[in-house]
Amino acid sequence: MSEPVPSKAILASSSITQPGELDRLNAFLERAGHGGHLGAPVHVTPAVVQLPVAGDPRQVVAAVRGAAPEGGHHQVAVPSVYSVDTVNHDPTAQPTPLLPTSLLHARGLKTGHGTVTWEPARPQDMPHKPSWPPRRPSPVVVVLDSGVKPHSWLPPQATNTDPREDFWFVPDPAPSFVLPEPDLTKITGDYDFGSYWGHATFLAGLIRLAAPDARVMSLKLMSDAGTLDDCAVLQALTWLHDQYIDSEHRVDVVLMAFGRPKEPGEADPELLRDAVAKLGGKGGKGVKFVASAGNDHSHTETIPACLAAEPNSPVVSVGAGKSAANHEPYSNHGPWVREWRPGTVVSLMPLTKPGPGASEDGNGFALWSGTSFSAAIVAGQLAEARAKERAAKASSHATA
Image 1: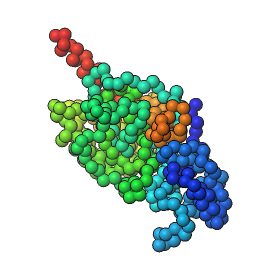
Image 2: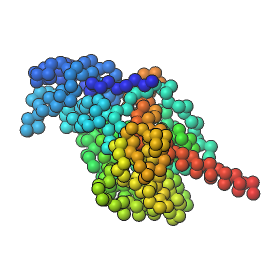
Image 3: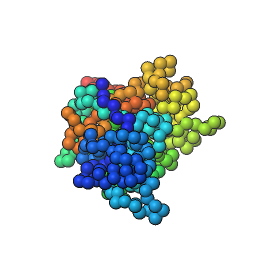
């Protein structure tokens, strides 16, 4: 079994381990009437530190955050190079940053998709790593998400080899998307580990397991807090059609592990439907779309997964569980959900505690639940099916 993340802890960037920093922070908390609530670090990586909290971590964070007067200058010399957030299992809790710099939180909450926190998993819990390079022509799965990060379990990014041999890649040139939130790492120079910082990497690991012959194209549309803009999705789909649907480039599956509930009486979005149809039709070489159903335990349709209910739709909507009658308690459900796959799975986490099997940069593995991950499994299975079809066709041509 994996070791759960403590329900009372704070994550901070590793600069908090500098001499005197923790003592200074606890002294400030004591002056604020909270006492010395932060314990010594229990898990440390070069990127993140986990600190136990004796009291309510949200109250501790709020106390320090409230120390800044209107002028914006802190009354005490709290270092500005790190920020913290609580680690808990409350899906209604909102992240409360210590300082207005980059957010560090690992709760994993995103409306409709990733459920509460991921939990560190042992290396032996991760299935066997498939071999690379692939045996068959590589189908391409486009992951519209938070951006895949390097991970020691994934085939390494090419250095002196052809980049077309990489398992995952960012297209060059790539489109640029306006994220809903500012990228504070560019302002502070610090790391930004939001709730969804590792989301796309987790998805990539599941795709790799289901489709050892596939490659992943990473397009970062989602902020590290798990939010994205509808316009960015349309822009990405338009760009894919214009740039990657030709004889030289191939896109086979588009994974959309995000969404929002439909408002009462709201129709399916026409622009999104048209963009999907354009890629999914013959002119688009029959691209398949996989969308997660959402984690609201609701019958309410989710956009874009609801498009699967339309006749001849190239969209596959996926819920978490064995079937509509035996689904996970958190999974959305209804006749608009077409496929079901496991939702509680082990995959890659580029930010985790060190330990046996973890690399020096903190790479490790995690257990996470949500329909995002059910959808990633289906996306990989669709890609692997295409790889086998193309291999069979190539073989028949060779023997003809």
